[in-house]
Length: 145
Image 1 (spheres, rainbow, N blue to C red):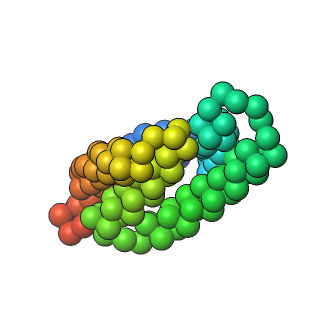
Image 2 (image 1 turned 120 degrees about the vertical axis):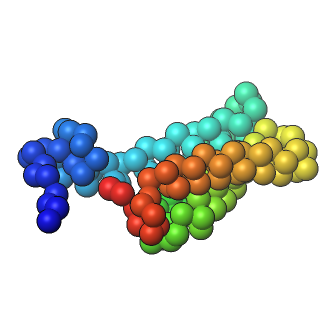
């Protein structure tokens, strides 16, 4: 009869040490989308003004982009975790492609170039994430934590 080997305290199932507390993980669960949203919103506003003066509409665009990015990140994270690996990768690829496409469209380039560039980004993200999710599952398709 085979039994699982005991795991030392402070080590996760993959054998790596878990150096952060549960409180830190909970804080980062919310801090990461907010921080990335702020960076994304600033980047959208900077691309939109193209080196010109900062206006009220430019600031509003940055804050609306921040909120939209953070809310969508949280929604995608909540929905994607229960999906099979193919749909999980497709959902994150669609999110990243749309985010990149909107960001690139603010530079003033043509919409065709924005769409093509976002499709390239989406395909790349899909390939990387599908490979990651595929290699982190067992034979039945259950995630290895």
